[in-house]
Image (cartoon, rainbow, N blue to C red; front, side, top):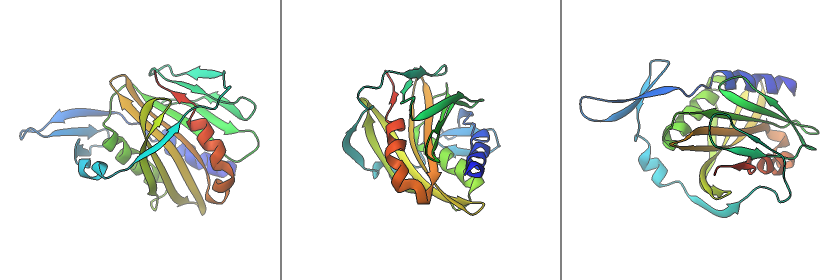
Amino acid sequence: MRLFFLVFICFVVNSSIAQTKAVTENGDEVLLYEDGTWGYIKETKSHFDSIPTNTQNFAKTAGLTFSIKSKTIPASIFYNTSKWTMKKAESPSEYSFTHKTQDVYGMFISEQIEIPIENLRTIALQNAQEVAPNCEIVKEDFRMVNGKKVFFMQMNGTTQGIKFTYLGYYFSNQSGTFQFVTYTAQNLLAKAQAEMFELLNGVVVP
């Protein structure tokens, strides 16, 4: 399963979300990406109007006291050190996580720039499709996580014959943006998703 981890790292290394806001001569707001492409800021608004809100309240596991702070945005991640090992990662990622007993991984990616969630959704999907062209969103919703509204996505795809699943939280405001993603092989998801959500639900934004 280490191959799976290395494939995902390739996705992360290429997942910079740097871009520039601009206004066209017609007054439309667009985002200019580093690869020369662009997109309307509000082009997926109608789609987002139909995305449901999960009424469940998501919160970090009681009793967790150990946390790490983002150096990019005001956010902390509480996690169980008996289950996860954490390492500082290279930009644009801040931290990587590896489960100690399961083939499950996590990555916290942050930027200082504010990005509309609809565009962040598109960016995340496009980056995943660079590794796995058949990658698709199979579930998405808005949810309250430790008192903050975040966007959740589950993406499935196949690369080098490995069927994988990403479970991720996406958040952006005037203080910056984060993508907090956990991932594993699809055949391990049923066993691993409780651990994945426990890690994801440890993110706290003041």
